[in-house]
Image (cartoon, rainbow over all chains, first blue to last red):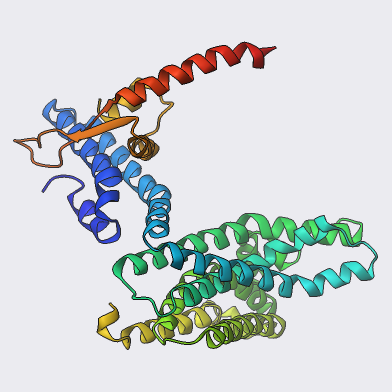
Length: 316
Length: 77
């Protein structure tokens, strides 16, 4: 079997014939030719390096370029669905962000310090909640009563993965810095970092340190915060699949909006309530912290899959 | 030329991970055309894609080069 054969087989399931011919096949052909030439010259080390570089190029093309190409193909082939998705998704994003930052923004007004840039500092913490609900609304509304072809499913999967990537990047790099800057500006002095301002590594290190000192409640607090971050990052994918499942229910416009609003309220309330009540030693057991953090995602994902499984075959 | 030949002759200005996207877009615009070479007989595997410039592509390149040459002194000023 030639090198890259399995990768190509796998990529064929995800990519269209045009994407395969234009992007994937040339990368794999390069890998195969270079590798065979090095092998024929009996340069074993060189062949191994070529193989690694070839695989790296494949994954780079696949992860960075293929989603963009799929998005473009979907936009061309499902032009009206794309518009129907983009508008509700944008509205949901704006409304969710506004709902989440209105309370902390009010505290700025109380201190007579309302400024646009301070509100901007509040935006990053709203994004991990807004992205999944925006993706869900876009899919559930835009693809409503449309046949769920293979291309549509592929596109939804890519959208979910892209949303997860955006949420994860925001949570890892933007949220801790933005939160700490906001607190420092409000307090007008340097403030010690709390759990939301810590990096993921700091959170985990602190949690394990508290646990080793027998402070299980504090350890549980931080462990839950740590796992909740990753669960929030993964929510985009779970909500994308849930959205796909909801399209199969053939709901009306108002019902779709109601489902989206309910999902948003329940999801945010779950994390808000557990965030306030988590100072208990229960979450010092890492398994429980993981379970409670990922439970909403799991339920949403399973519900979406159940809807998809019950969908009539004619729409497949 | 093959994609990989373009990468190596560009002195690393073109990357393996992006060259085929660029070539695809250029082909869409009609600046280049491509064809598949014969598949390798002995080893098996995929045939490589060969790219060549079209007449339109050459004209566009000439025009761009001329514009860049004329504008460069203006920007440098």
